[in-house]
Amino acid sequence: MANTFSTPSKIKIRQEWNLPILKLISERTGKKLIYLGLPSPDVDDIYEWIDYIDNVIAFQCRKYPKPSEPSQSKEALDLLETKLNTLETQGKISTFTIYDGYIEEVLLRGRDISNNIYSQNEVITLYNLDYCNSLSVPIPYIDSDGNEKKGYKFDAIKKLMEFQNRIQVASKKFILFLTIKCDYYEGEMGVLINEGCDANLKPIHQQYDNIKDIFEKKARLLRSYTIQNLKAFFISNGFIPEFLPTINYNGKPIPRSKNDFILLHFSVLGTQMTTAAGIAPFYQKIDELIKQNFIYVRNGNVQDIKIPNIEEMDVQYTPEDYITGCDSFVKHWIQNE
Image (cartoon, rainbow, N blue to C red; front, top):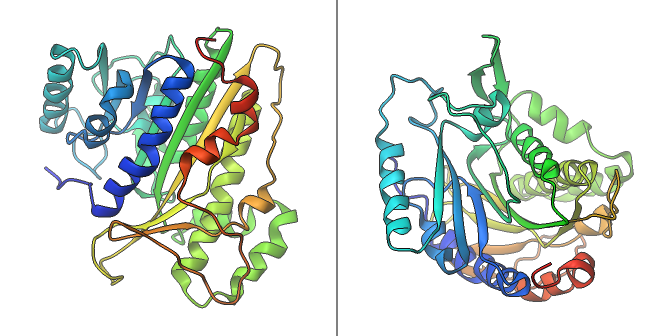
């Protein structure tokens, strides 16, 4: 079994960034949330947010980072099932579903490696996609025709938005938390991030060449690429996306070293109304979003870090203020609607 993914910085974000957002959303809508995510057998995020979670939909691979095979041990799945079953028995959640395999392969194949078909019949209101590795690491899988395929993390997110869009209800409102490792220059993903961006953002990207710290430069390019893609996935499925400031945190509770790594944590509010048709509006400006400084969390502490040779807008560690300032939240997030 792998060690817990919780670190002082991750715990800080769960407790003081994510939790206030979930509390505010749950109180505003008058409902507990339907969680879809990658909790790992530790289920630390679910434990932390249990007061605001009703149903759980979880994806669990058997032997990370190996490709899924039915012959692999089910220890991780069994442990996850035991913990979720305990929460259900205690009345802390209403029900749960576990899919056997990586989220990429389950969504793209349409079923998990135990042959359970993925289905969604209600609006997911909380996505927590806490990925262990970088965007450039694909998951190999066999499709329904027996062909070898590769599934990337953004493929899974795009598919989730498509499933969400198919649900026939009056309105859809949700929050998406996405965590990805800031390591991407391997192979084809590096080409996409450096060359596949909006031409209007090129001047901003060129300013990143003034940043001497390669970690900081990579983090800003990755943020830009991620926001552009998430925006496209949301609006093409009729969802209004609104992005909160991005959190930049260290993955290990030590000063930066060859064993340390940086992760980016994104928070995106999603809204779809019955009056919406086709492409959704976008109330923000990507150039302004990527000109923001990061919220830095290091070893469990929020730090005011300014990067030399680049001008950026200050941001604050006040998630409630950002949520309540979102246009879609003000206009459309009405209790019990």
